[in-house]
Length: 366
Image 1: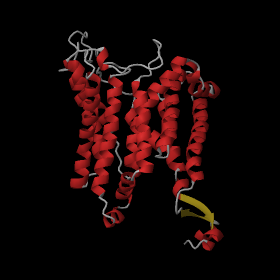
Image 2: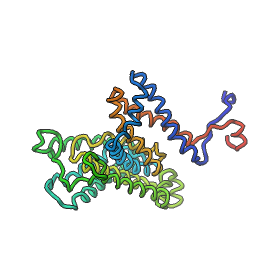
Image 3: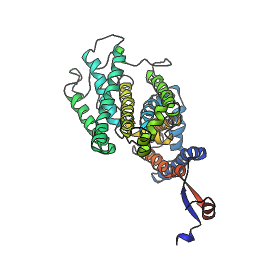
């Protein structure tokens, strides 16, 4: 039977540039096509829904600033996760690391709600980063000591982090003057990121500049440093790494700590930016959407920037689509699911290619 098939799937010796570019393009095209089918089945106008998703977010300065507000945490989390993913270390716990980073950073303005010190915001940033790393280090410890799956451990830690947050905002950290709402006291101005570009309705803030700097640092680390190469080898080829004197355990620790630091920093950006206080919902799922952004960007720091902007457009456009196209609130989540599924399917083109049997024999492949 196998001889009747005129082609075979053959592993690539190395990923071609064409495949790396083609995969995200195919992902987006297939997502749009399936979304058209979905919107039609829901009784909505596909043209109006796509307009709401991809055109309306650019209709005003406020909408564009909201794209930047959404893109910043998505890109920052994805940059941290991608470093680990390149080393085959699967940190699925960015959401929990974000929450723990936000909780730890919020303790400073909650303790000193009237402070005007210029040191408050830097201290919050430091607290958030350290807390995110500490939360991620739990998974690193269990992986390197007991060979426990970091996927399972980080997923469970997400739920633990959320329960800690809910307990704190309904108990010890709840605002006594907040009419029993589960939230902390509002933060003072010294604990908030300064906004950019001016304008009362523009929410883009300092976190955008931090994300740009972090993306540049990630590009330098991945493409220009020996440490980044050593991390990659230590994760994907443990035997070769040991032979060369590289440590797989070191790759695991660095991967998870970097991802935790990025997620913790995003947590600080949320409470010191758009939210301005600690509350039960800190993000619309940035920790999980960051995984999609990392893969859609090809685990490349530059690609992640474009993928983060694309995903941010979907976030902002989904709000418009709910109103303009009258689609269910779950449709944007399905939209994101399409992106991940089609990326994983299309990514086979990066690692494998389809050849005719004659080409395979002439190339010496089995």
